[in-house]
Structures are given as structure tokens and as C-alpha cells.
Image (cartoon, rainbow, N blue to C red; front, side, top):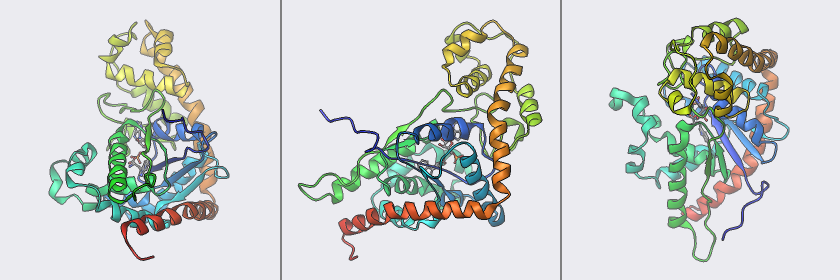
Length: 343
Ligand code: AMP
Ligand code: TRP
């Protein structure tokens, strides 16, 4: 039997795209878990600007978003002294490794990616090649640091499975006889009760930065009033909260709001259901508002402070860049050597 690896042998990598406003789904599905995991496991977090340009971006807005997302991650509690936080495009090894992986990954594997199908929609012929091959870049992000654990929301699980397939294929193509596999297979970490936070307007749709309706999501920059209004107006049904999980599952909006409450208070969904079963939304919503404001207000006010000094944010990213390069450069060098390049 294989021995369990210790926390020090583990390495976390995760990324977030600098597009639009970060929202409660990003916080509960990803960043909150990053903050908890970094305490015990060496962690690397990236603002993945190369991923952002897979769909058209306004260059000025992209620059602002990189600063905003960096500020949001720090304001949420990522400790830049302990963990590495950097901007993806500043470490050129990501694109180099992605190209090598493009020559390992099979078209058939990419054709299965459901997120591409959703994002490209009917306009598939007009989608960029970048949007199509984006999971290959994501595999490069993870494997460039030989990360073992990848905390993400539910929507990214399939991409991490692809990263595992690419790592295995690379190992069987290039690992020398009698040598250990070059890449270990990264594990997805889908943690907490809110791995898929849904839209406040439609409990069957994911909360997303790209939803045209701002009322569908709670942004990390929203004021107390905005948070309160959005939750007050959140779609519900006329019935009191049910007794059992089975009944709750057939009520997507109620399930979503309870999941959010559970995640914000770091308790299980069944305890949350017990707490509120039989109560109406007029009782539940004010308590949810209180909890959401209590969690998010300190984050948005800290973000505002950080954003007053974008030069300082650039400095933090620069330090992260140097630390990231120290890990990435030797890994890529070895990969190029295994592939047969002269370097
Ligand atoms: P993105 O906004 O696509 O860059 O996603 C950044 C991180 O947030 C990824 O780990 C996603 O899985 C996670 N995420 C995005 N939307 C949601 C959501 N609605 N619920 C839970 N996690 C999410
Ligand atoms: N694709 C992820 C998203 O859209 C972001 C991302 C890019 C990522 N590279 C990554 C997440 C590597 C985890 C690991 O949410």
C-alpha cells in the first residue's frame, strides 16, 4: 500500500480569472477554501489572465480586473507572505508547457469538455482556438508546479480530470525506464457545502460573472444595501422550509439559499435545515442577509483600501512572480529535456 503523503509533500495550486466582478460563488467555491488550506499546505495561487483572453477583453478593463481580483484574494485572507500569489502571464513557462501538452492531449479528450460546449454555444465555429484548448493551459498551470491538490468549484472537476489524463500520457510517453513517473496525478479538492452556488434569480443556473443580470449574483464589492436588496429579491417559493433533504432537493432556490447559509456559517446543510425547517423565508432571509453582510463587508472594505495603492499590488505580484519562477523554471527545463529539446 502507498504511504499517505504529508502536508509538506503536498502542494496546492489554484487560479481565478480576472474577468468582471468576483462573486459569492468564487468566494465560497474557491477562495474561502484557499484561505483554509494555505495554513497547512504550501500553496500557489494565480490570477489567470491568459485564460481571461480566451474570450474578448477590453485591455483597460483587463488591467483593472487583475488589480481587483488580486485585492479580493488578499482581502479574503490569502497570506502573501506564506503563499505565492502571482499573475499568470508574467511566468512564460505556462505557455511553453501548454504547447508541449497540446502535443500530448488528444482532440477527442477536448471534445468531451462540457464547459467549452456551454461557453461556445451555437457559435462554435466562431469560438477561439484558445477557448477550445484552455483546459490544456490549465493542465500546464497545475503541473508546472507539480501541484498535488487543486481546490476548485464543482464546474472545474472535468478540467482536472483532463490534467490527470495529460499527466499520465506524458509519463507514459516520456518517463525513462527505471525512473519514477515525472508527474504525479493532481487531485481535485471540491470542499464545503457551496461547491456550486446558483443564481439568485434562477436556482437551476450557476451564479456567474457573465450573467447579464447583476441581481443574479452577490459581488464581493457590493455594499450592505446591495447585498440586502439582492437577497430580499432572491427568487423563492411560497412554502415554508421543509423537514427533509429529499424535499429540499426538489426546491432549487430554497436549496441554494440554505447552502449559502451553511457555507457562510461553516456548518453542514443538514444542521442548517434542522435550524430552519418549518420557518418561512420572511424569517430566514433577514438572518441570511445578516450573515452575508457580516462576512463580505470586511472583505469589500479591505479591497477598497488595497485598491487605493495599485503600485503596492504590483509589488506583491512581482514578489509572487519571482517565487513562482523559481519552481517553474527547473520543472520546464526537465520537461524540455525529456521531450528531446536541446537546452
Ligand atoms: P472563474 O470565475 O471561472 O475564474 O472561477 C474561479 C473559481 O471559482 C473556480 O474554482 C470555480 O470553480 C469557482 N466558481 C465559479 N463560479 C462558482 C459558483 N457559482 N459556485 C461555486 N464555485 C464557483
Ligand atoms: N479554469 C479555471 C476557472 O475558470 C481557472 C483556472 C485556470 C484554474 N488555471 C487553473 C483553476 C489551475 C485551478 C487550477 O475557474
